[in-house]
Structure formats: structure tokens, C-alpha cells
Image (cartoon, rainbow, N blue to C red; front, side, top):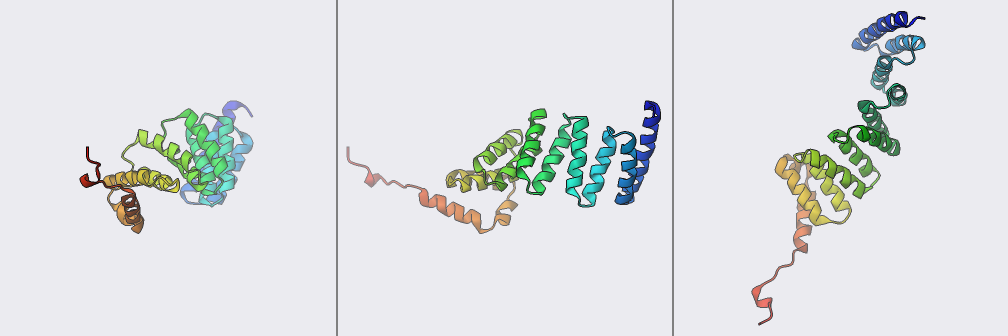
Length: 209
């Protein structure tokens, strides 16, 4: 099939698939997209719609396969790397998710969302120091994220640094006071633990000069 004829055919198929997707007829849309991909397996738009259909049908593995085909066509598509990483993390495939997010961050190291997702993956693996590094990068780009400050506090606490944990958590509360209600008693216990670490001195304890 000549290139121009192929483009016209796949465009018509894509339009039909999009109409089916709008009506939530995802299985029928997939059959239509497969017909288009048999004509042009390098059409990224067809693969993108294939990923959307499979996600709506709760078929994450098939969605990942579609995203991988998009990356085969364009390996520098940062958004696709991020979406791939996000799905892997949802599936608790943290190693694969981390690799995908690292590729995304190579393309755009200023992506706050990617740093946050990377931190989430490291938290799932209990890699607290790596999670803090990722959160620090996110906070450098957006220092007003209460969620990132709170998550950093959780990581510091897991590492046994209760003072740094409290500083981070208090910063989160300053930005969004509702966090204190959501977190419940944990913050009060953290404050008490830090208070117990305080060393008080009184003048009478100083040796006479």
C-alpha cells in the first residue's frame, strides 16, 4: 500500500476508533485499532488509543505493551515513559517503574510528578534514603507541596531521625493544616518523642567560674 493511501486508511480507522472510545465500546475499538496497526504498525496514535482502551478495560499489561510500542517508535517521549512507570508502580512492579521513570527524568529532569512517582516507588521498597533524595528534588522544584514534605517526614522517621521528621511534618502542616487531622495521633506522638530528646539546662547547673 502506498504511503499516502496508507495514511488515509489509518486516519479513517483512527477516527472510527475514537468514536467507539467516546461511546466506551473499548473491545470494538481495539478490534478497529488492530486493523489499523496491521496496515501501519508504526502509527503512534493508534498505539496510544490502544493503551487507553486497555486501561479502561483494566488490562494494564496490554496497556504497557502498547506504550512500549510507542517508545519503539519514539524513545524520547517523556510522557510515555512516565505513564509506563506509573502503571508498573500500580502493579507493584517497582523495579520496572523506577527504570521507566529514570528514563523519563533523563529527558526532563524538572518533572515534579516523575520525582514524586520515583519517591513512591522507593517508599514501597523501603529504600528510605533514595526516597528522600527524590522528594528533595521534587521539593526543590516545588517547595510548597505539603504532601512531599509529609512523605519526607515519614521517610526520616523510618530512618530514625525523628527531629528531621518533625521539621518536615510541621512544614507540611504549615502549608496544609488539614494534614494534622488526617495523620491523627502520629504527629502528636512524634512531637512528644522529639520533646523527650530535648536537653534542658539551668544556670545553677553551670560550674562556678
